[in-house]
Amino acid sequence: MPKNIFSGLEDLGFDDIDEIDLYHSKKEEIEKEELLQLTDEEKQKKLLYDCEITCPVCDNDFKARAVKTSAARILKRDSDSFIIFDVINPYFYDVWVCDKCGYAAMKRDFNKIRDSEIDLVKEKIRPKWQPRSYPEVYDVNVAIERFKLSLLNYYVIDAKASKKAMNCLKLAWMYRILKDSENEAVFLRQALEGFNYAYFNEAFPLYNMDKFTSMYIIGELNRRLGNNDESLKWFSQIITTHGVPSKLKDRSREQRDLIKEAEQLEKGVDELNNDEIISKENQKPKKGFFSRFFS
Image (cartoon, rainbow, N blue to C red; front, side, top):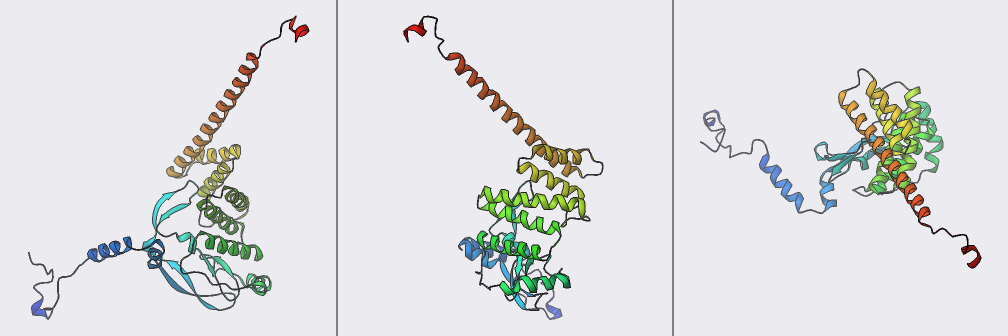
C-alpha cells in the first residue's frame, strides 16, 4: 500500500506531495505530549486567546481573555449545574470588563444594554472607576473580583432579577472552589431570592433556563440552604407535572430522596441522643431513705 494517499495525481501536476497527516492526529499527539511537560499556568496560556471588544458604554476598544472552544474539558457536574473543568476554568473568563469606564457584565449580556442603562453606568460607575491590570491567566480570586464588579453594574442599571441571580450563583460556585462555605451560602441565598422573583415576574426562559429547569434550580438551591420543606414542594411539582423531561424528573427524584434520607438520618441521631440521655438518668444511683441522714 502506498504511503502517499495522493499517489496517482502526479500526471495532474501534484508530484511533490509528501506523506501527510490527513486528520492531524500526529500533530495532536505531539501537542498533548508538549502540554504534559508544561506547568499549569503555561498549559492555561496555550488555551487562551484575546478577542477584540468594543464597550457599548464608552466605545473603548479593549481585549478580553477568552478560552478556546476545544479547551474546556468537563470532569464533573454538581447538582446545581456547577461544572468542574480540567486544566482551565471558563468561569474565570465569563466577565468582560472595560478598562476605561468600568462597565462590566457577563459576556452574554455585555452588549445587551439600553441607552438609559448606559447613562446610569456613566453616572455611577465611570466617575469612581480605577483601572487595574489583570494577569494573563486568571485565578478564582480574580474571577470573584470580576463577578462582583459585574454584579455591581447589574445593580446600578437595575438589571433583570434573573441576571443578578445567575451572577450570584456563579459567585457562590467560585467560593465553592475555595471551600468557603460561609460566603458560598451568602450568594446561594441571593441567587435563590433572585430566581424566585424572576420565576413569578419574568418571561421564560430565565437566563437560558426554561420553566422546568428554573423550578429545579429553585428546588436545589433551597435544598442546599436547608429549606427542605420548600425544596420538596418544587421537586414534587416537577415530578408530578406532565411534559417535564424524564431526565429532569429523575434528577428531582434523586434530590428529593437525598432530603428524605438526610431527615431520616437526623431523626435517628436525635432518637439515639434521647435514648442516651434517658439511659444515663436511669444509671444514676438512687438514695435510700436512711442515706439522707448519713450523707
